Image 1 (tube, one colour):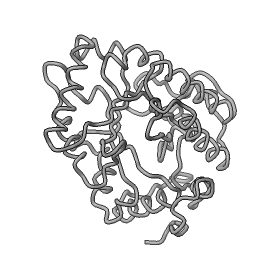
Image 2 (tube, rainbow, N blue to C red; image 1 turned 180 degrees about the horizontal axis):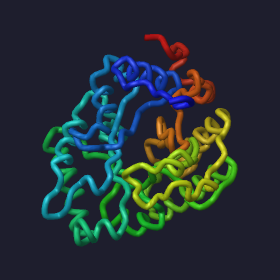
Image 3 (cartoon, rainbow, N blue to C red; image 1 turned 45 degrees about the vertical axis):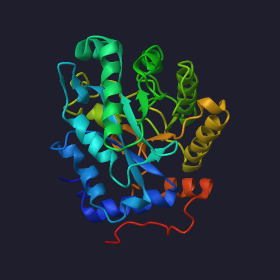
Amino acid sequence: MPGALEFPKLTQDEMDLEIEQAAYAGIDYWAFVAYGPQNPMSRALDNYLSSRLRAKVKFCLFANLTNWGIKQSPSADISKHLDLMQTDSYVRVMGGRPLYFLGFIDDAKIQARWGTVQALRNQIANFRTQARARGLYDPYIVLGANPSSINSLARQLGGDAVGAYAFFDQVANGSYADLSTIAWNGWRKLAESGLPVVPTVMAGWDRRPRVEHPVPWEPSQKPLVGMENYFQAGTPQEIAQQVSAALAWISAQPLEHQAPAILIYAWNENDEGGWLIPTGACDHSRLKALHDARVINQSEPEPFCGRY
């Protein structure tokens, strides 16, 4: 079709290249959204686990609460997540604790799927018990959600920290600086929970591709409704500055409230405007800005496209 975009298939070689690109930028880990093992969206994680280079960039899971099943029938995926925690490249923090994000939590989901907060708390406690039974350290569980949802629940649920998949304003537009301010305010609001905060840096927020062509899993999105709601792209240097700001923000917290990680939205949420992965004829300027700002992994060569 004239003018159509063609995306490369996710091959093992492509995954290996992406690992090298992320390592060059100084990225310590990827947080893979946890889908079921048979879900085609798990292919990226499968290719990562098959990579000979996976030690260069570790990984953890960002699970959606809905994928934990319900009180009467907890999902079999929970056991799969524990299996993955035993992988040598699974990221560990705080002296060996597997890092695990449990996100998209709110009162409505808890009530519909678990009945009570206590029931979900019991499941989280059971998750920890199962991890220890496998010889793992107690998982470091980050509860992720909108601050207004999670702040009143985090301690009740027994989380170690709070965070969010992304920060944005669905019905606003503005500059990258405006988006960064929304994220900054989100960190501060999450801190009111009394738990450590894993701050999420926004690489961008521009859902116009999904607004123009809605995806099947967002049935409420009508074509072209909300095209005006997006934030302008940040420069590579602005994004790198926000990463540095997040690290500094953690360091400024009291020692007992210092989280062991930050999250960047995102490596490849391209159709939502949050991406670090090279695009546009392998423009890896965002990765280079992170590399230059953090001066990590200086031995890593500059990555480029089309090598394989």
